[in-house]
Image (cartoon, rainbow, N blue to C red):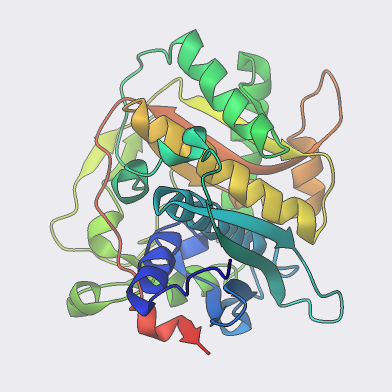
Length: 330
């Protein structure tokens, strides 16, 4: 029996939910192309949204696109479709990151573990506010670690000595940026101040910066830098932040796409567990520093993201590009 064609509203809805994923500086570096006759949705990298200074090998770009791919899988299952995914399906076209065949479920059991994450897609927001010092329960940590493992990654909760090493690396990266006047070029390009913040469809608007850190050790990047932001206060952040390190076995484009899917799966699980989250890859933008962030006990794996978890404000929603700007239907 021939499969039914998907209507434009369904495809548009899937892409809208995919595009709710996090990406470096909210650049949203993805494009989608839907092949109607084949019922295949192609995910492509958008090189115009790359960050040559802070992400020269496009690692973060791939991670963001991987997160969007995971949201797409969740949204498809919620719509009673079976997403059959191939990563990097055309070696001669490195910008083509994934092809997703949206098959009918045809009575086959759907992946309930994916389906139950659907409500968290729109609830997940990055929080740049202080969290409490309350511990994350062990059962919640186990759930998050299992989420990463399901996508071929490892989520490590570092011991205090290792966590302090990671925080030192982040501080080193901040100091390096202070000495290099061009280091903040990408950050400045992707932040939105004043009236622009109210009309932006991408980037990090000033209302999402959070307060300036007065005290504490939480790794929260200051998107304002030395620029003035009206009515922005200061706050004391956690002195013992709860960190998690997301790692993959390898460090190539396919690994980065898997890392992005694992990251989003962890973030959606954390959202359902009422945890607030923020991300930093500041110390990971240099591969030499990235190696130093690894688990000192095993010395293996490639750290792709540092997560900060805790209980506190969830943060505001950040803007998204209209679907018509990122989706082509043919």
